[in-house]
Image (cartoon, rainbow, N blue to C red; front, side, top):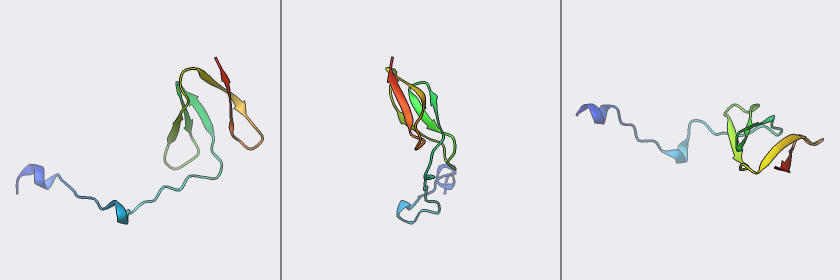
Length: 68
């Protein structure tokens, strides 16, 4: 067995050790062209592009976007 074979691992994603389940409510922050959730265990993001800007959140915690 060579060094590359020792450093290689085959994963079975049908039997994952960890399953990501996002929170019901997200705390969104804009980072460039992305809205990034800062409240979930795993940071995740949504692409909104460079022509939109987050200006706040509505009563449900959803981002309010305006065209720039």
